[in-house]
Image (cartoon, rainbow, N blue to C red; front, side, top):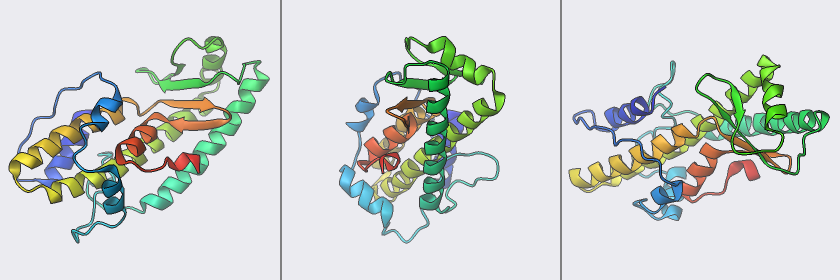
Length: 224
């Protein structure tokens, strides 16, 4: 999946009669994009839960095989499943770190490198030990990649619902163009963070989910 295909697929579904070039990726803090949101966060969350347009919202923007952009999926059920899988992964990783002599009081931020390996972001004192846990156990590394990707798909789906609502509420083509540019940038940021999760205090949080819930102004489901 590429960032461009995600954004273009969503636009093609919402506005099939228009062609629009994706905004180039920008390396800016995600807080920059939060300030550019068109609607109040509370309004976005309320309408995402109960859209008034009568149209089936886009519950996923994954663009992956077997997934149709705009097709309604049981997002809340999927989120609960991913939440459980994330908690189970966090528990096992915490136990493995303890057994490896890693100081679990220091948060661990993981990511998936371009070659697919699971790596530690930043200057963690036990970086080598942690990365070796995944390098020496391909099944565990695969599990991390799957859970992080599942979190990312849920995040993209949540933002996708708000995207469709914003397009439906746009008063003219100029406003629709602004909506598309804003959401292009947000979707790119979510996609960049798709492999990143942090273990802290025995709990695992997804960077994509954190970004999506901050953008929408809703509580992070992983915290409940």
